[in-house]
Image (tube, rainbow, N blue to C red; front, side):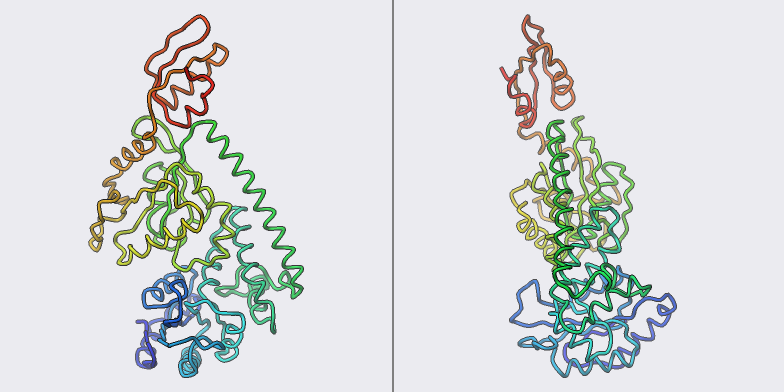
Length: 442
């Protein structure tokens, strides 16, 4: 049982919460209290409420922690020194001491000085939502590119927090010295020297490495365009079912678990379409409310692919009570990434669940689990990708007869006539193929 409070601590509920978690201690899971502040002066991306605290608890569980209690304070304005008020801080300190709390996680972003002041008052580690998400990404990133992106985001987050007595640095270094703790994965104390020039130099090195990754992606993208291979990207809120959909459509056998940020590194597979053509389908990292901006910047090398996709499939979990808000978060992030103009189609997933909310008629309802609607989805995707297809006549020189194979593979050949000087081909094809063979259009 998890305690939730707006102003006063209910000790009975806290005792029960602590008793409920006794079995967890044996596993080594960190015991944490989640704290949020709701204030009319906050913008939406800084506001905390019961829903964001519930999501924060899911993030904590993903990172391997256990929530002992939650505390939400309503206040006219944040305390510049500790974010929460003095009374709430005193309650929180008593709670941490009474229930052997290892970690306090704030749903709101903390300034460096607020983090130091809170740690001094509470005598335990304090992190905010951004650090928790960065920690999950650090644990999940598998590829070289993914690790570069996460490391860059961590350094950018850490740089302005190097002032003061270095409390946060010593905690971060615990991971490399053998210590274990949520929010401690990543750059260690030996790397995070107080010399800011050293940190900035490392950031520049990571940025250069990611620029090289971006150049490689650009070359790969040009090659795909030459091969007339349309691209589709799966986007959506974390845990909406994107990886499961990729598996169902392509037999990709990607690990898909019911937990946040299961997929960090993009995975691309060939997708056979209902008209016999083939597209490339890419699973991307899930979005989330209040995603750290350092992480968005670092992942731009990956996420910029969304701006070049022919079609985005926005996967939405309609069994979630706040799916409207989740969809809005995704769409706002698409705008931030410059992908708002990319053709997007909503795919309402998990309609098989009892608590699923009937979706509107602006997309397609499916269930990856039961397979319902998947054939219709493929048909719609084929039609949308072929919306610009029209009959075109080509005059191919005999020394470029290889383009016949391209037309058969990526178009629909209607007729072939062998003339003295060229091969006359009538075919139905899309805009990309017409551009590729533009010099031979008759």
